Image 1 (cartoon, one colour):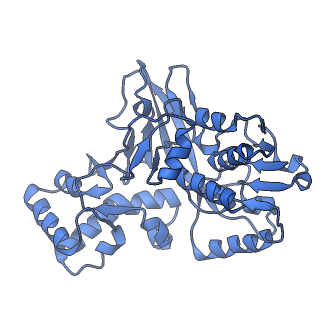
Image 2 (cartoon, helix red, strand yellow; image 1 turned 120 degrees about the vertical axis):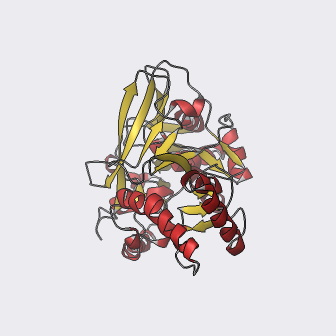
Image 3 (cartoon, one colour; image 1 turned 90 degrees about the vertical axis):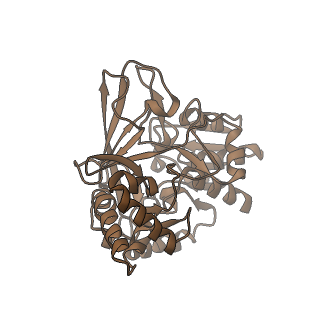
Length: 364
């Protein structure tokens, strides 16, 4: 008998694969619902609400895509993000179209030519790379993008100056030398037609799987199981014996408005204005029909045990060293496997979480 702790994509994938191979699985989750941070539901207005912020599935992995297609069909939604820069709604990441939105045409043309002289078209260049250029115009562009798009947004999101954030984070905020306004360029993109919770439910709907929600790991005698697949926080498994691993959390404040749409796009970022980082509007994802609309203003905050949820591991050397202390401790347990965003202390997109679980199953 196998125990899977956590009913998000990581846990659901490993549980499904084990069950398909003929093994019995008990899946537990401390929440009242399955699907983890991908949990969604239809509200009284018929709008599919992403309870923990917008989730857009995207992948270049045909293997992951085909696996998930066994449980759902997708629409053809391709995500775009709008940012408000100096009161102008424009495209994020910053691209050639953004140049022409925020600068006079003649200066935008000059910058476009200089960018193409120094970098290849259709490439994403990390923002900090532009600050290393010798050209005065490119330095100005670097400073403009850094200040208007990156600096204030990152400070709100991570609670520290960008200079104190790991390069792995800054690399996620590129300038895209293209006119492609999509936020992701992956081959496969979309939203499950019945929502993410329905996908997870189908993955766990197997004769060899038993699911128990509202069940804390500490209430289960895990040592009686042949194998344990733990997708919770690795420091919590070891009762924080080396200290807590830091995370950033997110607070979503929902608002219902008596209008067809509140904003021009599914997600609008506010790098320099307000205390929230962005506003999500959920009707856009599945083209839900309602005379009302629901938005969520997203506020970033530090994770505090018992107060909020873990969202983003905080990547820096100190935290990596602390995580590796727990990883070394985990090696003492030959039948316990850690995976997922919390178990691996690593930020995964949904496809990455699924791929990690598939690879772990194949290695067993």
